[in-house]
Image 1 (spheres, rainbow, N blue to C red):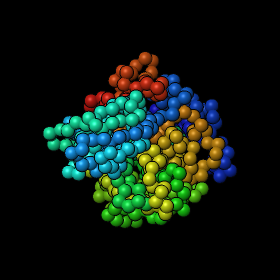
Image 2 (spheres, helix red, strand yellow; image 1 turned 135 degrees about the horizontal axis):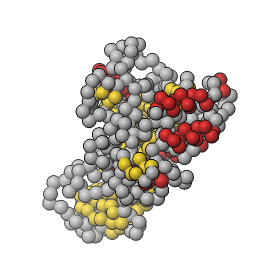
Image 3 (spheres, rainbow, N blue to C red; image 1 turned 180 degrees about the vertical axis):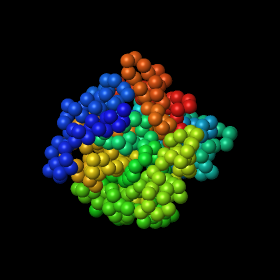
Image 4 (cartoon, rainbow, N blue to C red; image 1 turned 120 degrees about the vertical axis):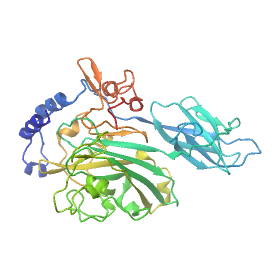
Length: 427
């Protein structure tokens, strides 16, 4: 089916020369038919925004017992004494008697959270609250636990890409899988982002970068990595998508862009790719098969790098969150360099200008998903996230009442679909 669709879409594409003239790339009606027939879910919600998060603001009165010395207040998405990988959604320095306002984002489905009064010896005194019905929380009745705490991690989002844009994909959303975690700053003017490359489920070169929303290139003092390593790893890479190896890039309109990697396969597993980039790279599937076989599949360790972004104005760093970034992938199609953005930024063009009338940007489809989870399990190769046609519900997230496909058909329901994987067909 992919081959047939590829040939079909190639017939309706205009010559590349028209791209430079910013004319329509597609026959709109033909392209719409292609997309509708290829997508595994009927009747996409026309109002879909593909968003799974919600913003909140909570006032916390740190009126703990007079015998307790606290140094910090944290908002957590779980109980770290009973659950692993509980995430810190927000935190601030605080002393007993302080009143603090914390702004943060949660998965849209999650209403019950924890506030922790953190003591000077590291204990977390906890209280549950409802994020919708309790805008102000008192800490006079926090609970202490005797068991060993599981060290919380910081809020992490998982980013999934179909790197076939603008043509249809197989919709397993594992062509490129990254996790990004916002770490605590170590100075007033910095932002720290830990980027983990988890999987590459395609067989062509794919690059990636991060658009720092609401920041211009001139706002940034420098971009470095914590230990000097980069994903490109000093390889003599043929640059197709990102012309310079610099970590800080200037977007087409002066935006601040963080350079991640020029080739995802080399970034994740250089040792298994060609010895020299000028040779014939393998571009095999990494971490998308549960039991790899043959010479086109492999399991490798995820690769993790922390980026340190220093701002010229320290005040600009204070309220930064993961909602302030748009990580995007880049791939080639029909002799053009294409950017794959999350839905909220689908029409953005950061490094490659394809014109303003490109039809693929005007539909309500998304080739990139943001999952507010540090533990999300992506589908194995060839398994779609979800399928719903002719009344049949299946796929990697198909639990009725909590399924991806039902969420696609109605963006107001099944907001928790990503915590219900189907056993055996997720990685």
